[in-house]
Amino acid sequence: MKSSNVLRPNRLLALAAAFACAGCATTVNVAGRFPARNQAAADLRRVAIAGFRGGGGNEFAAALETELASAQFDGKPYFTLLGGGASNGVDAISAREYGRSVGAAGVYFGLIREQAKGEPQQMERTQCARWDNLVCKQWYKVPVTCELRTVTVTVTPRLLNVATGEIVYTANKAGQEQTTWCPGVARKSEGTMIAEIQRGILRDIRMDVAPNVQIVHAEVMDDASNLNDTMSASFEEAVKQMKAGDAQQACTAWSKIRGADSSHMPTIFNLGVCAETAGHYKEALDLYNQAGDLLAHSGASAEGTKGIGDWLRTATANAQALVDRPEDKIATAKIRVQRLIAAQGQLTTIEKERQAEAARKLREAAAIEQRREEEADRERRQAAAAIRHQKEMAAAHKRDLIAHYGKSAADAILKKEVTTGMDKDAVLASIGKPQHKEAASASEEMWSYPSEEVIFTNGKVSYVEKGK
Image (cartoon, rainbow, N blue to C red):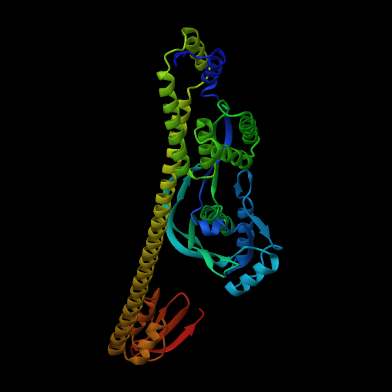
């Protein structure tokens, strides 16, 4: 009986080939999938836009249709857009009817509000007060009334499941842009500001309802050794299909091979790539761990074989030096999929932070609005108090005039007029000192002003001549 550590030549050659090809791998591009924030919305891929109510609703609906049409997944459009373009704004019942009429699985509709608000801002501008030989010798500041223009866009998108009538997605999206305009400075148009706000809102909606797809590089092992001829051919064909981008057919073939031979490490590894490509990262990690266990077990068996000659060890060592070690491939895949798992957790955290940030901005906007209202109310109260004070001062002044000169003279003084019967003090209070005085007699006197002459008889106005 032959010793168990003596191998036949053909067995030695097969083992040498296996070691030489161990770790053989092909780098292929696959889509790394990241889920949408709302999976129920992402499941409805045949969609229509029923419309948005509010100013600018038709324009926003058309922009949302363009945004969804541009969403890519696996290099192909993720959504199929149906219908003849956005219709008028509708409610949920009408949206469902519209969706049925165009054969859509989901229908988007909602509300939009575009608000523009201008507030005056007092600023200063420097101007020249005195020039000397084209050189300004004295400057002064003049007040300039500018405008703080605030544009706010608030959108409430909704997605209705046509089959169930359920609203599977709704959100409150808001954005704000501000610009300050002063006379003589180019003004940023409201249309431009609204378009910038809408771009941010549309990107945010797309992240909610469509998955992220990133192209990553994954190692697909192409070692078909230790499989029978039929499974080996199927395995190699699956590698070609994966290279060609037909992951579904390749993964189906490897699943069948695994059903027949669950110990073939490259097949288990490649199924890990399939799971990773499909976004099933935990399943992928489990499969990579299984591949690592199988590799470790096969390595231990090889170490336990003591009858292999030095020529075989040298040959296999040289062959392995030409390719990456399979354990390195598995370790790299595990690290990559662990990062993808961490990225999913990060996306969840980012979403919470986004919601918190949106709530913070809304609170800040509400606080700013409240402060503005309080400031406006304070200014109104101050203006009303100033008007009351002016009226009170005017009334007090009139009372003093009436007490001193009488009502008729007081009315004339307030109008800066001179009437007969006024004494000299009343005339002085009304139109001031004359340019010239002339006494015609002991009882008559004439005061001359630029535009009139006043004649006094016995100290009282007896005649006023206008238009001198």
